Amino acid sequence: MSGNQLTRRTFIKTAGATGVSVYVLWSGPGTGSWFGPRMVLAANLGVLNATEGKETLAMARQLFPHDKLGDEFYWVVVESIDRDMAGSPELASRLRDGLAQLNKAAGGDFTAVTAEVQLEAMKKLEGTPFFSDMLNKTQFYFYNNKAVWSKFGYEGSSWEKGGYINRGFNDVEWTQG
Image (tube, rainbow, N blue to C red):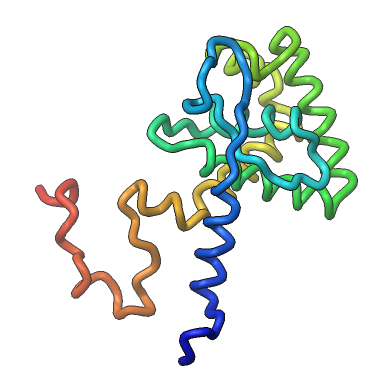
């Protein structure tokens, strides 16, 4: 291969680095620095506005909380949901209405309340199509993100490499008796 040839791997690395390179402050109660849990990635959202993006991010973090993972992993979920909304006016309407209900259930601003209040607000919407959409889409887009896999020690599919028998089948300590 030529050194100047764009490969799939190079494209993905470049696109990922570009997407993660620009950060903006997500202002909220008690945040006084540019770093920390209130940081959110800047993105070109097509359907969600910035406020709805932050609300979607906060809900995704509550649905599948992993404190050791930064917002950038959850922001992939927001961008993916935004793309889904662009392709389905019904979904866009349902999710926008659901975010409005979520804010109402939280007493005004879902992103400005404590984690406990956020959980209570989400429980009030648990049986709705909005909640089901958010739960299923967050689970799919979050755990289908290969960048997340390494954070949990998952090396990815092994069948195309001959399986796990000769590739560390017994190297995981928790499988040992």
